[in-house]
Length: 243
Image 1 (tube, rainbow, N blue to C red):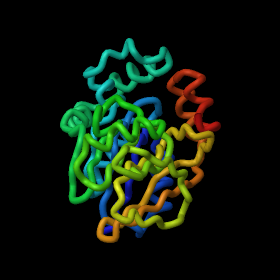
Image 2: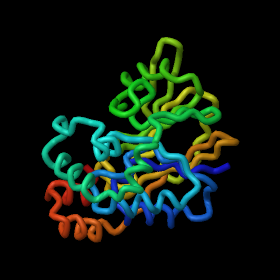
Image 3: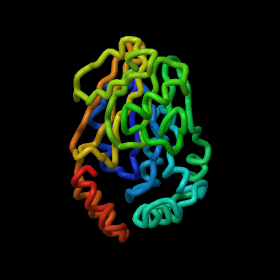
């Protein structure tokens, strides 16, 4: 089975639809690693679209924030404003959907978490040392995470915990070779690696073959909708720059 692996849609319907179009015919099931909402202008539309697909989805920190499960005083002012708007905008049906999402999931040889297997909702794996500390927190060979909005592979090299950080090679198949890895597909709706293109991945779970992908989308259309809802200028601008 081929899996469409997505994360951090962040209420960006245009990016989400572009990813689905780009990946059309190449997958049978969706694994979404969390943060369906937050930041963007289309929270209900993104949840509604995801619900039409055969999928499983995890809860991310912005999903929890929209539900009032997190103290948003820890968020920066722009993120707090976006969270408050999202809370007011979500329909009761979509609130129910988000409330039911698990924080981790184990399926076959894969552990899924939004942030990390150690701290599923909050921890960012941004460097090899943090990845190394997380390998003892899952039992499967492979772990998929999101949250950082940066596509990457962390591979455990030895029992001493040495870990390699591998940059994505887009549209190139990479066999996982049974080695323990933590893999991030990047963000659909708000990339933060200086590349504004939507990021996702295709995973063949029978052959354990991974493929990072990027696709450009109509950023200006999303920015226009955000401006119509009076969203913070910094959140609007960042989409064009990938930060």
